[in-house]
Length: 115
Length: 113
Figure 1 (tube, one colour):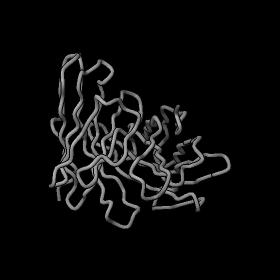
Figure 2 (tube, rainbow over the protein chains, first blue to last red):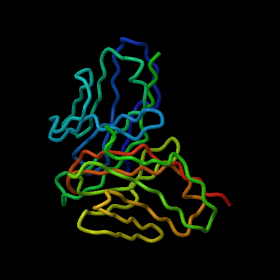
Figure 3 (tube, chains in turn green, yellow):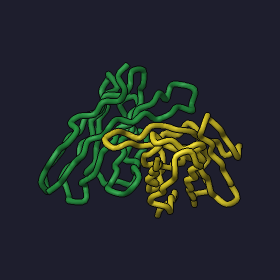
């Protein structure tokens, strides 16, 4: 049973560019959340997707957007990259349709470096 | 505004002894607390959780204690093993089914042989 998979594992971009990160949730999961982990910090919630809609959002600007596909996979898009966007981007999946106390399962992340 | 704080960036413990990791929170709306463990090049993995209606939850070598009045929780690992060396994150959410986790900064635990 494959867990949460993310691609690519590493990415280097320059300021002003746009980037797309991808996530496939764990089998049986229908909800995807994205987190940003800056160096030396804990993960910070970006947003959550369920039923192909953004259901909850953290304190991130509109440059951060996402999408969820019918197969529950998800993309995170960041426009007009800033140096401060350099971080590890983590995808987490769960099954909201379950008992209500579902654990989040995290992928290994995409390390984004903005030069 | 850091709603969940882990004030010790690192902790070193001898193998076989007890490891105690601490976490403080400021948001009174938090109702459910979790600990995650993270190895290098891997995503965080769930370790143990506790609801605000309890003050203790135990799972094998891992016990989490919650002191609601002090807004403080701790993770005890007994006995500590070399494989426990990792970064530990404390996290909180406003209800058990919520998807948004608020994480602390993490504590790097090193278990020395």
